[in-house]
Length: 471
Image (cartoon, rainbow, N blue to C red; front, side, top):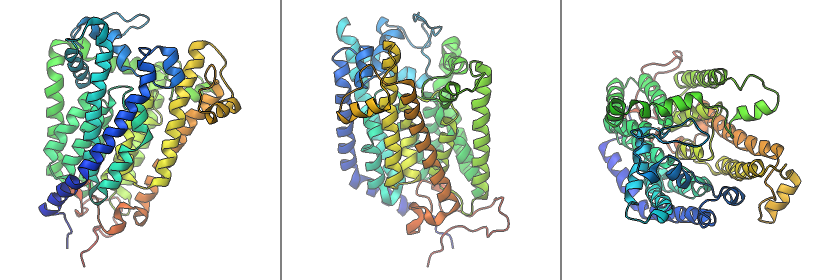
């Protein structure tokens, strides 16, 4: 007989979240405060670039207030600006992120001209901290019985502390977490609406659609899939259509900029180019390599979804598809770790590999800023031995780090993310090793997918049932 979750189970999920919410809110707020304090040595110098790279407390928020014309009262997408040394003339973020920036700019209008830049930064930090709390609570709700453990893993992560305020990514992260929470609560239309808003804030949540569709196909949940897709399209159009109609050139800036952008620091192509791979200066070829590799990996995830001995859990596939997008991407900024954080913890709430991954992210976080310090200072930078000596002395290496040491930091992040993805694949292929399913549950994040019968699978020789029977 089916073990599908009842409305009582959903209500129990709300009750469980209510019990742990005060703890998770307090811990997240404390970590966010520590993240703000980590940026204060740079804020005290108004984010001078040399000092921010030396102290590893860089943010885009403060400089872009001026560079993107917000300080001059320009409205994102509708007004143009002239950025020295750049062919960008409109805000190069999706519409909801630009709207978020505009709201913060309006909130600091009462301040004096000289104080508005720092006020814009601090107001943005406060709003992003609220979004971090939302993301943690929504992720905890999705986790079901392990809500406290999962919530604390996200809230206490070094990645959240170090990268929360580099850019506006937490807006999309929070909306994506709310989408998962709504899906888990069996409200596919609302889940789609939240996902549409997340896509309007950042591109990466668009990739959630693939796993959702594949799992719905395997479980035969056509109605839920249709409502989710309709909600996604409706919410995305609601936000984007007005800007598309009245500020087309500004609206398309994000897409044209993403297409024309070359190799950025953090990309594996940056490392490969440095080690003899040619032709990467050709943007079209670079786009083809990155997109082609992602499509191959995505096809592998699709095959895995439809052939696994037991239908994979939704967070497992969401994590894998975002990793597949990031590994061959030409851009991999430090704050992109926030995209993976809730998904990684939901996919595999085990500490050893998670802590190793977080260590890799910490290594890269300091590595990128100290490498940019050597580049901007035009110095060769410290070697590996001198870098380790400086770190053990709790100091930054003089003049930053060398190109080779930065390569080590880049590979540290790349390899730990890849290792975590491989472990998730192992859990999918060997469901008995999946911690979430070890106590008899199917998929707390699955919503209508949880304990549903399989109606389509490429493994036709196996039994169509996968749910754990009730005894």
